[in-house]
Image (cartoon, rainbow, N blue to C red; front, side, top):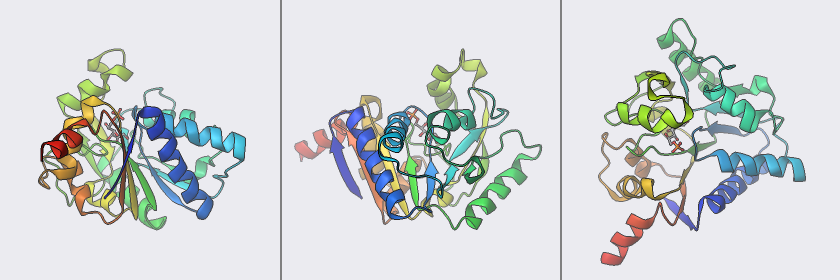
Length: 248
Ligand code: F6R
């Protein structure tokens, strides 16, 4: 695992965007695996800025998102589809037909999860997967205890994840209780993974993810086994890692 330490959120976003831009410039048909939430917002802002200033083209890129809430239509401001259209797909001119998210409105959610796995396979898999991490170690919506062998599936969101995401809703009770997410095994098939982490509240889990036991109770710990992971983390997020290193 390659760890890049940066000072703050802005530098993390800039560095992550740089890696994505270089990947797309190097291979215009790149399949990007994308995440939502607070962490990647700055990265998307830098991608859009570069697209506008330097003309990096996303015309041939395909994107596959990690997850979507069950029951949220793309027109719903709280859906991940809406988030992606607003923050990246539209401003970076990524053709809509080349962007994929699970359909949270599907009548049969299990079938939808399977269909999404096939979509991913038909694209030849993800070249570069952008990931954030939850305070409980989740990646995508794979909560602690999820099997490392899991493929795309429907999940019940834990109280802690619903609480963490409540800031995007008017109240916690409005946060959906289910989502469709790529599984851990699916995520691990990405050729390269770029994990971005910022803030003191992620410091303990980042330490456990990097140096703790590889355990299904800490889903992100499986990343220790991936051959090509780059972690860009700011000083706050790396504070526990650095404290423990000093103590030794
Ligand atoms: C989002 C996702 C989640 C988030 C994680 C961190 O698509 O899959 O795993 O990456 O919940 O969220 P933030 O960045 O809001 O702290």
